[in-house]
Image (cartoon, rainbow, N blue to C red):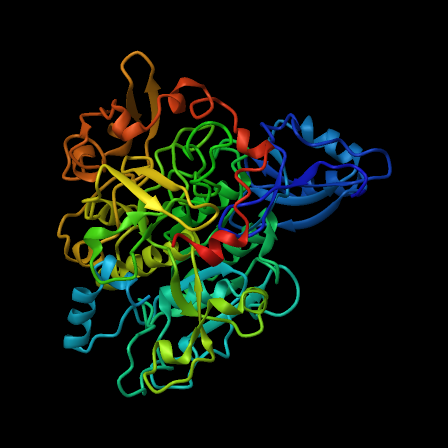
Length: 571
């Protein structure tokens, strides 16, 4: 594709990491894609109504197009198209949408208290039971540093990384430093500090006996594309039975550019969900973005906008052992999702200043060495020099693996549990005793304080409570797809849609009724917040930005939240 025609442009900010985004595509009309001139090609993802056949592929190659990839479990194909091939696809009635191959990127000790992991850990330790042994979690990220002993079995040199593959070229090591951090939260073992006498901190993840499937979809700069992520998801589905992959962790995303119903990235995560894999996705780090006058509402990123997946926002645990003073972070993206208005996030979990395993020599560690812990921060006899083992990062990227780990414990308890049942249990049992309004002083990017409201579009069902979810004895049935919402300008209320017969998990006749899942502020199917205390300034709802049918964030720079969030968080 010629670099002289800018049909992709730079933008920033999903997980505190510099990202790329693209122009929106609506259906198969190619809106937003600049047609290539004769002799040029354009790279696209094509979604078909049915699985593409050899004839579909031949029509592309006959017109001098190139097949970059096909996907066994998703009705998508990755092509490089000439003008002739593009025109042929546009006229094909079997084509649902043609989308640009959008670039995207990456977005413990105290945190484990906030998610109420300690009682659950005590149950496993007392009984001598392994924590999610023989269950696989696919980490689609910037790779995992297999040399770190945190991924070995406890007290052993035997690695729990059972499979690795790169979809961005090169090796499967973590050159960015994000994937190793994420993988250690979901399934790390503290083989490093366990032998230190008088250690003051612990760095174990959650599912400490689980197997890790390392699918590298982001490069050393934390950047990948829709195609690389879809290829990774497709591979995880292929390997599901081989490695008992039950959870996919996606601590990544990009701006929403079209409805989830046609977005190829969303269609890929739905394919995994329908294959029996729980998909957990970061909400995004655009909560401070007021560029559209929405106070951060409407900034959920894809594929977290898909109603099937579990979308996770981030809270600040204040670095202590008391979850009653936890607050939402200023940067956690808020719903509803643009275009489809899906109620998101589904849950929140700790994501601020989380210490986890580092990948030595990686881009983040090299550029931000001060985020390494010092030896004496966990070893009373250690020096004040930087440790090569632990690194601090912030963002919804860090919150996501806490929910992935929790899902694995529910699967460990009941191997027959479905992704919908996992989602329903986690949401039903969430802790939601946040104050109605939280004032958060931050040192970056300014000294000003942020005011954040605890509502359905900021905290979702509430904060992850692992012990409560594990001990929940109800058996949900039906779909757990997140409902859509609509705003009534005359009454100032939000109506929840799609929670009837098609979504019996949230229906009024089940133990997972809306008032149980989303708390007492939900009355029937009406979220009667209404007041400025919850919604903030009326200017948020005075425009059609949030409730419109397009996504303004897909065409602008959303808040310029660069790597500063990942490195600084809320302090």
